[in-house]
Length: 403
Ligand SMILES: [Zn+2]
Image (spheres, rainbow, N blue to C red):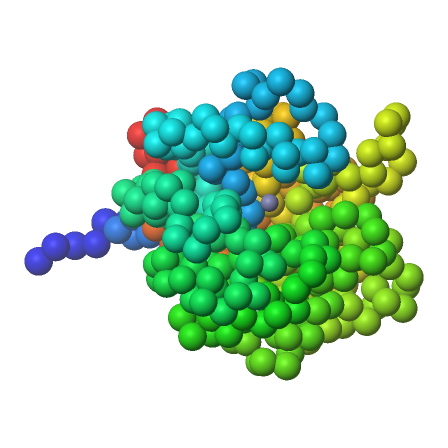
C-alpha cells in the first residue's frame, strides 16, 4: 500500500483571500495574511499549522491570471516607422503591420509573449485575436487555436475580436461563431458604430446558442457620446445571458455625468458583468492633446468595485502600435493600475483583479490554496503586498524542495 507523502514548508505567509474560512489553515493573522507552516500531502497544500520557526515568512499564492491581452499583435513595434498617436492612428499602424504576418512571424511573437507570461507566474491567459473582414477565420486565428491546444504550461483562451457592424449580418455572425472552438470566447470592438445594437444582439444570440463567454472592447475613448457599456448591460439584462461577460476599457464611463455613471454601474452590477481596466494602453493612447496629457483615460475602477462589479486588470498591448513598451506580467499591469487609478491599500483588495476576479471573468473557478497542487502555486520573495506588487521575484512553489 502506498503511503501519502507529507511534507512541510516552514514559516510562510498566505493571503487570507485565497484561503476558505473554517478549514485546516491556522496560523498567525496580520496584514491580510495567515503565517505558519504549510502542510503538503502528495504535492498538494492541505493546510497550515502555527509555526515555532522564524525564517523569512515569504508569500505563497495562486498563479496569476491574465484576462486581456493581444498575443497576435505583441512585439511588433520595432518594425513600425511611426508610433505615438491616438487610438485611430494605432489601429491604422497595426493594420499596416499585418503585411508582415507570416505563420512564423505570428507564432514566434505569440510564443514569446506566452513564455513571458509563464515566467511571470501566470496560470491562465486570455488573448484577443483580430478577426479581420471576412467571415472565415484569419490565418492567425487558426494558428493561435493550435497554439492553445499544444500549450501545457498555462491555459490559453482566445477571444475572437470581430467588427460589431459586420456581426449585424446574421449569416456572417453564424459563420464566425462556427469557427470558435469550445473553451474560447466571442467578442467585438464596440465604439459607437452604426448597426451597433443589431450586431450586439446577434453576438448575444450566437453566444447563447453555443454557450460561449463574451468579451468586448467597449467605449475606448473619452467622448460622453460613447455608451456601448449600457447597451451591453441592457441586452444582458433583457436576455438573461448566463455566460460570463467581460467589458474591457470602459473609458468613457469616467466622463459621463454622475447620474449617468451611477445608472450604468448599477446595471453592470445587476447583470453580473465584469469590467477590465487596461492601464498601460489607456494611459498611452487616451487624452492626447499634442502636449502632456491632462486626462488619464482610465475606467472608474473604485466606483465599480464599490458597487460590486468585479474589476479585472489586464496587460492589454505589449510593444505594439497601441503601447510601445510594457511586459507580459499581470503583476506589472496591477502596479500601473495602482498608479493610474489611485488604488489604495489594503492591496489584497486589488490583488483580486489579477486572480479571483479575473477567474470569474474568464468563467473559471476562483483560485484557492485549499487543495492546490504546488505546481499551481507561486513562492514570492516578498513578505507584504506592496513588495509583492512592486516586482518581487516569483517561482513555482514546487521548486521549494529543490533548494
Ligand atoms: Zn485590448
